[in-house]
Length: 562
Image (cartoon, rainbow, N blue to C red; front, side, top):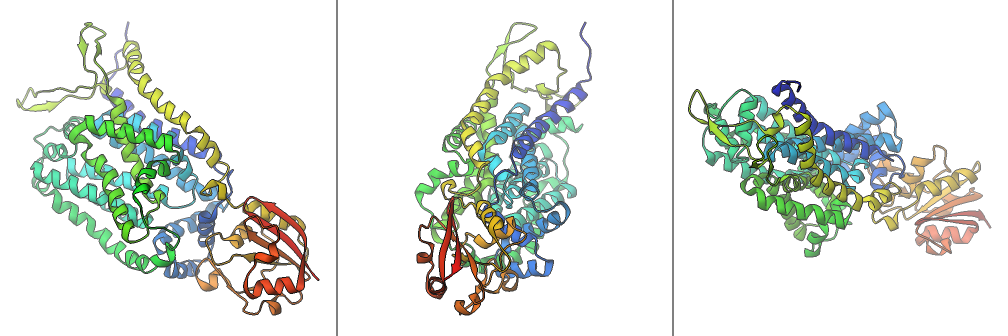
């Protein structure tokens, strides 16, 4: 005897699992080994900014890193609550990526069905790049979250217009710009979707059909509505969208102006974009060329099969990439991780490809039927066409459960294959976050050497001090008590940036220091020879190397006065 279940409850439970399973899976993968790798130079910059008093933090954003200032402000409050360990610094990113995976599943469900949404979220969960940026104390994970959230809210607003829905979308766009200005390029894809919705005409179902032919009708059934529902507000989605962007324009314009003035200093290490960079992008954002290529192939297949339904997620991938690449040809700003926010949309298309189900025998009649089809039937009361509820809302029995697993097993195997192919990168990124990984600086190893051997009255000197390696910040993070930085006359807080001003007369500043710890980037067999200018002369004239240590891409030498 079979147990009768409430179809509505079964449908709600299935819908919850679609986003809950990817969210929990991504959170579990992101938290695995989250504190193992030591913070690398970008994370050291985050830490340096986050621990400063608020007046100093605001001064910093007026000098450098204005675009990242809102994220630093968020981390400032977070660090005061939970501390500044590697795990604590990275936890907001892990939570953001997990939420992004859940929203990716929601978007996939709305556009292509529950199975496609589930597979899209799971595919995002197993990508090495997802783990990499879930364990990165930088704003890329938050930007990814808000890019997907804004897109989901846009689809909802186009489906059924309303002040609350457009206000939610406006807030998500503001948050997106505050976390990563380049991620606003996703609005180009949103603009195309809004124009398509405008051309579709009035009515919630017609508007939603411009984005997803199934989304409007299926949601109408779920909400107790049908395709006839709509009002005058639904006739002007383009106007509503423009109005929703006004808060972002007001909030983000000062930030954009300030960040533009800092571009030459902030991105002086970035090379102009080249055509070869486009080919390398999937491997860059996925942290694995093989896995990135697999996702791109599945996404292309999903777009080809989905047709018009692929418009929104497809453009959310293509337009930001093309816009940033075109700008990068003129202004150096092409960095693969800046486009991490496009990955969930590629996963949505890949989920659509994986969710395509062949015709299978019907359990009751033995006839062939298309499992994914949702036919339109006449409404009994009005005679109008309406969309039937998806098969996922059907009560689950032992037979349907077996059939469900039969349908899910092959695409889940593909997702598992993507995870297996990325295992070497998953293991590697939990050892070091530097890029390229062969050039990672072992700040912790250098700090352990200095911490174990320092004596009262010791001094310390770093070389170089003017780049992005942040040797001094690395040792400051790992050592609460460290030798006196004798060459500093203005530190990072006084300068309102990440560097220091050194003593113009090093011999005078070094006077009285019997022992000096010299920390240099790279492997240096003869460290005194590589330090240039007057600092090198002062060290070579007055000191000799007593001991020498080498750690990955860093050299520590103990000098004593001759």
